[in-house]
Image (cartoon, rainbow, N blue to C red; front, side, top):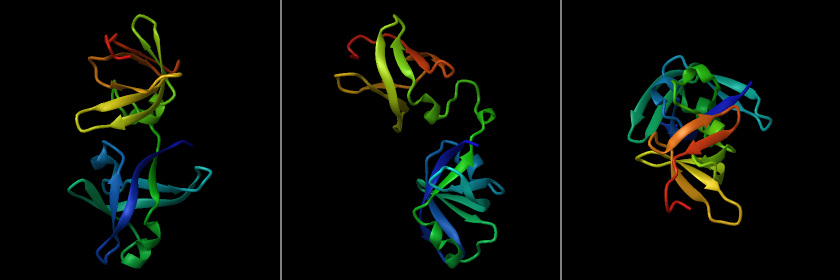
Length: 169
């Protein structure tokens, strides 16, 4: 089974078993809604504990949640510093949406078949996501992951075609 990271637990909140999360997902409302199943993984990326969300609220850029059967601070202190995961489900996405982990290691080409490099990671900025593309013997290049630049994404071939942008390289 494949999992996706959705948050890190940063600290406890109050005495009633709530924890503060630093989210890594755009789908906060659905990932952390009441009844959602979240997982702790071991080093081999296997689920070692399933946690069911009891409550969720947003405070500034952080999410505060509580879990079923964890009603006091002592029940959640061991979670501080841990990451929360969900089961990867491609049906969760709408057309044109991608999990960032699926874009990593894709080869990137201009629409004139010029090879640019390989996606190292997807960086999130306030306006849009950006592909960090590693190039051999050159500095990394940042390409906005927006419809006006991205012409095609083929995850089966691990290939992304972007509009030729003069001066990008």
